[in-house]
Image (cartoon, rainbow, N blue to C red; front, side, top):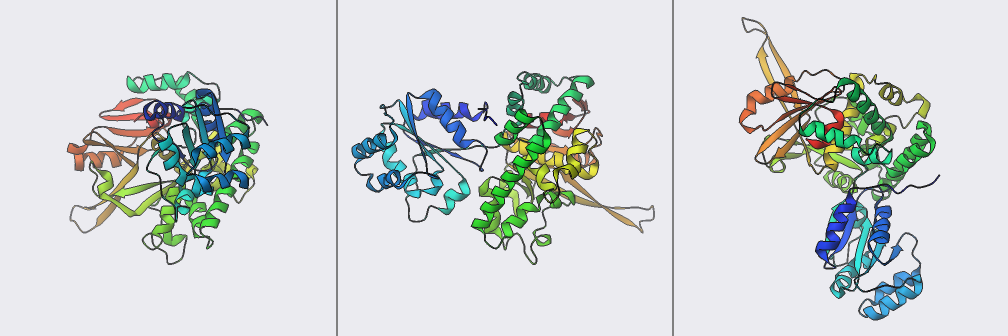
Length: 455
């Protein structure tokens, strides 16, 4: 199976760093494993520099590692490095890549001295979780520009499958609040459902393009999930993180207003296992949405970090994890989603997809719930309590944008309406994410799910 090099948006951010930094900082690309960090670093080095050296610390031999024990003599360091790798370096025209830098903390500590020298550029790649776990007894360099990398977003996925103009049409429709037409929307939704099934992990996308077979894609995703679970077990031998991770689909399927830690780990609460939850967030394998106790600008100031929902960072992985204990052929999500027969009982797949798209677009995730009790009868002897939930809250300028998600074309939005009645002076725009074409319902902008990252 050939490995394609996919176009990624992070490339433009890397170019900006190269031009603006001009060697004054190293670039640290952080992200979950298998999202393409190493590939984009080497692609960038090959296209933007005269020469480059990659030091992959997962396989680097002792001769290379020992160089970092004698960093005080940089002339000797660079001469030995060029000799060992057979690559000639050119002042201000070469870059050195520290791949999987978390595996050798001394190399990361050396960044301070290497950047100060200004001879070459430096790019580091690694998992944030592993980086944080391997920084004891080293000096953390401040001379780093850190950027996050995520699985391929929907636009990148469309580029990968050859639909290079589709997202331009989607963006034009959104920016001009103009419907695409039902026939076009049906085709766009079909492509989006494909994205939800395959996901944005480069290996999975490559497998789809090579085989055009969901079973092959599913096997790739299972391997990635096993890798993540094994990593979590190394960090937490008790297996609690692995159980929390594996239970994400089950917790979302309950349609509860938060992830109930106690239902996964007996007698556990979010506050008691806060360090484990922080490790999960740092892994970037999952996306947390925290409850905003006061739905106003500055959402992080009012967040309840013990009350949250948890999503997988990649919806393709989510679909596979939901049925990890079954063979691919028994996976009803594949069948129902591809046939556009995903019932409300599986609507949480869309919620995970929207969470992924909002996060990769640069948003932190927050949600809001509230309840109201009203008298049911005229004489006031019976009361009924109703729960309302705003799936996501986005901060825009000095206002907020509430977002409600439907896994169908049904455009009822009672939670948005009640939220509007309570907080009208705080709202900039209300959004309903669903499966039909763009339209306006009074002041609610109803958007097809593939436009989620544009809100």
